[in-house]
Image 1 (cartoon, rainbow, N blue to C red):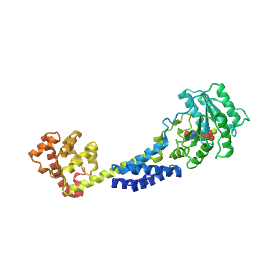
Image 2 (cartoon, rainbow, N blue to C red):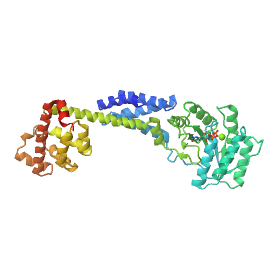
Image 3 (cartoon, rainbow, N blue to C red):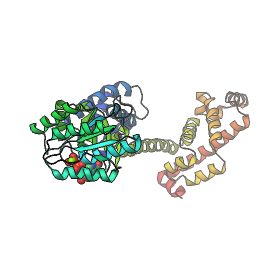
Length: 442
Ligand code: GDP
Ligand code: MG
């Protein structure tokens, strides 16, 4: 991503303004980035289109840092799509005890683990009495697994009765939850390696028996494109109310999150961040957005782009110095940059071989306030005076100082400083760039 966007940003930086074509080019790269993060193709396409509509309208009006602007628009839109209007991702509908929660998903997606994690969370944070039941009749080991987790986290599990069907277990869980005074009961369904009719029919039957308040689809965050088909199928047949993305502790880019959200329209509620029972967090859109875009890369790129821009300005200025041109506008430009960069350090660091001059200016005690005063003085000069400060006679000096709300002495100091700098610049200019570097290189 960084390499690809690098070229685009270089171009954006040079141009300084954002055209529709630029946005298109940048977004083509963003689309590739999304696909690399395992966002499904149609979802990536739609997303990019939405961003494009927003970006071209906005971007042409601003021209400060276009690269940054594109990144920000993309990032914001990503957060917007991921978050939806869901203000509290971790909220579950669990009033009206006993509230049934149905856990669905493919085998190995992390259903059983997540059931345990969520039960623990509801117990610890919400003070709920929770009952867990495994409906995985195909694999007795899976039922054992849930019972062991239950003991571990101090949550009750429905006693295992051999030979029962999933539907029978669901009925028994409902009864037990009602008469046992539980607030919530969680049904951990059986999974398959892929979607099949038998599985869907079974989950449907269970759903009709318990009428779940929440049906959470558990999806392995590392799976890419096929996760979309899974989500689509479950949502069509069962109807889900939320998604849990597991294995987000791995190095997947999290593109599944965007796909899930787009395909089901349901919120992502939690992310699994490990095998331990407390490795469950509420979903944070901006975090995942950053991950999908590889935000670290982009931020670094934008910074690099800005550095390039500033270096170019410095280069231009250097050329003027070499020609012996250094007027009040140049000085003002420098002063402004100094203020922006928080003093001399950055400015001097940017211009090669300026250590000696830096010392002189440091000695002159140039702090921010003085810099601002000087800028105000220059602002109060006429265009001609700025280009040629020798024009300033006593009466004009008074006016200029007054215009800036400052004393004439300060203006005199500024003019003297300008003369000294202009002299120095001229000398440096004569030396040529090489001589300049040799002389001042420090
Ligand atoms: P199920 O078949 O859907 O019930 O999946 P399981 O809950 O049995 O999980 C399958 C494997 O994935 C187990 O080894 C879990 O420990 C592991 N697992 C589940 N969630 C996470 C997670 O968020 N991060 C990591 N690293 N492993 C997980
Ligand atoms: Mg399981």
